[in-house]
Length: 343
Image 1 (cartoon, rainbow, N blue to C red):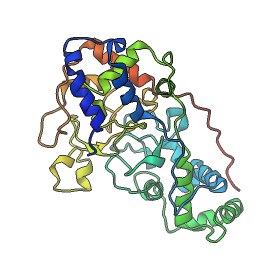
Image 2 (image 1 turned 30 degrees about the vertical axis):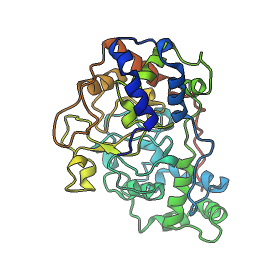
Image 3 (image 1 turned 45 degrees about the vertical axis):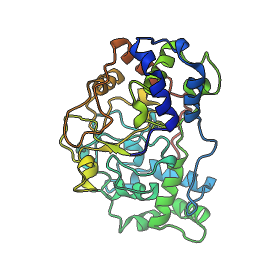
Image 4 (image 1 turned 135 degrees about the vertical axis):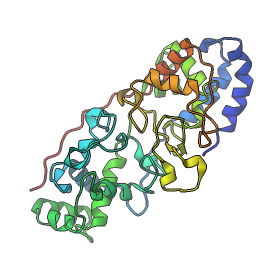
């Protein structure tokens, strides 16, 4: 687990007396310390792409077509976008995903927002790169159920794809590797826009309401949300057992024998979070108010529970301030057009 920024820790200690005295208004907080906090959430200027798969327009355009093409599945009926639908904030709006043969999957479909910055992927972190992740659901018999030994031949039989792959990968053409690279390139372009919170961080004091500013202060101190939801993307890219009533082994399936990884799941980004209900890996919490109440209660006590999970003692008003803050992380997004499929 990544550590909380030392500046945030120091400020938490300095502000403890303020919160214990019941002062909740952001206008009463130490403004210089609040400004220090805000510097930890400044958006990056560039989207990172790996050296072995650099960005090109042609590659991203090809990846978008592949992402929306149901012919990548064994049934020719499921595309990547079937589960990662831009209309549902790149999820599916369901408590748990639905895969091949309309079977319900064991976990909620995670969003693909801002995965260009992700270090490990899937709820249990079983893929290290987006290129690996792009192929995983295709091959999984419960998800897209594609026979990976035939997919290259299937795409090669489509003249439009042959031309597009030759342009995007002139020395390689259609291979399993180039399929993965194209989809991963497109996914790295799925980046959340400028939210009201970003405008506030940039200096516009009118961008978010006072309740949200109070929530931001709580987020970084008494509520300790920053322990896991850190940085501009509001995730530490790590795995934690947050005490849900669920027997899913989580990250322990990949790291057997590590007690703290039992029931531990990837910390999701909070960007556009209020568009992505229901919440958690099992879709068990219906709205953001329920999420805050869960953390306030401290979760189920067990050996694997994250050390950061403790009863918080938040008042109902403070719970509402946290929700108000998270709502400022939603950015206006341009509609995503569905591409014409190659023939």
